[in-house]
Amino acid sequence: MNAAWVVYCKELLDALRDRRTLMMIVLSSVAMGPLVLVMVSTLIGDIEKRADAREIMVAGMQHAPSLRNYLERQTYTVLDAVPDYEAKLRDSKLGKPVLVVPDTFEADWAAGWPPQLELLSSTSNQRADTGTAAVVRLIRSFNQEQATLRLAMRGVASSALEAVQLQERDLADPGTRAAQLTTMVPFFVLMAVLYGALNAALDSTAGERERGSLEPLLMNPARRWALVLGKWGAVATVGMLIAVLSCLSFLPGQWLLRSDTLSAMFRFGLPEALAFVALLLPLAGALAAVLMAIAIRSRSFKEAQASSTVVVLGVSLLPLVTIFNQQGVMPWHFWVPVLAQNTLMGRVLKGEVLAWTDVWPALLVCAVLVLLAVTSVARTLRTAALK
Image (cartoon, rainbow, N blue to C red; front, top):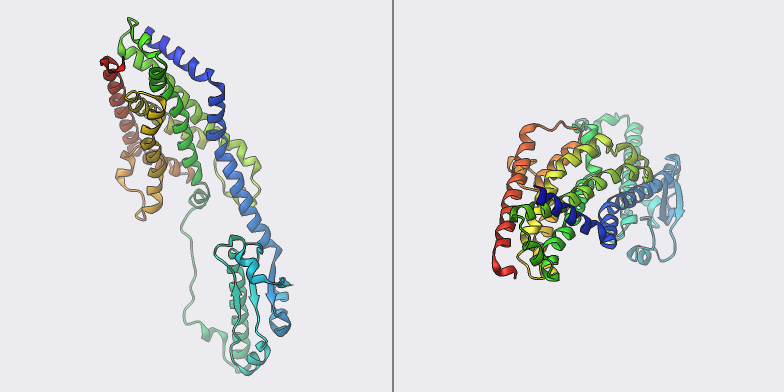
């Protein structure tokens, strides 16, 4: 253990000495999550701002004074359509959908024929496309009002239009609804842990092998297990440090949220951050061991980077299982690394209490991965292929 401690201190010092690489990891892994959170809040805030403006852009409103009267009674401001609005909508230069009113609106409406309105937007123009739902609701409300007035003039109750009444009730609690806005947090934290351990794992194995400093280290009388445990401990420590920083970075990141709705629903305080750290520490150790086992078989740093792409791809794609799986959380999810942590962190965001029966499979799998990977690294160091 003394030899392992010496190797651990040496590897940790080497990992922290490369300040440029460490700074890039901190900025890309730790700061990226809060930055994306701020950008999402800016987008949501912009959508809320446009909704609060209560403006509607119409082409040919002079042909429909009755529709203008209704829109103004709904406290909407009617804007005249800009010239060449179709081209501007296609080019995403116009951020509002355009309602086109035909010349015969009043004549058709007075004769009892439904006028044909046209709502122009573009699915490639997200700013304009998000405003179409509000315009559709306005026109439907206008139709309902006119139908009610026509029935009242003929002595028919407006309830005759509704054979049944439907009342919607959302069974999701506030924590579950808030978790839908914070699903990005577990993904960015997982990627931060991966990239935090990646560079240290490759440098302490394939990097030393390429520089020729691994052979002098193996000439020491220390056992191979001590060397491997020291290296693994240093890599795992770097990954765990990045995990802690990444989880805590979302706490001050909430101060920069520009959306009131997102600020009210975003539930990520110190208890959630500590729960995230507790779930990520075993995963950081497992990822460190797996990356070392892959990199130790490579003869150069670039070869190790190419080989570790499989791990990076797996960590990136496994959280998507919860999105494409429409059957909810399955029992096998807790036995798959990364997916188990992502599922458990999602439950933390929902405010649910973590059951020990769901946590222990993830811990067991991480422990088994560490044991197998560390054993593989120790056996590889005994071979003569390194010389």
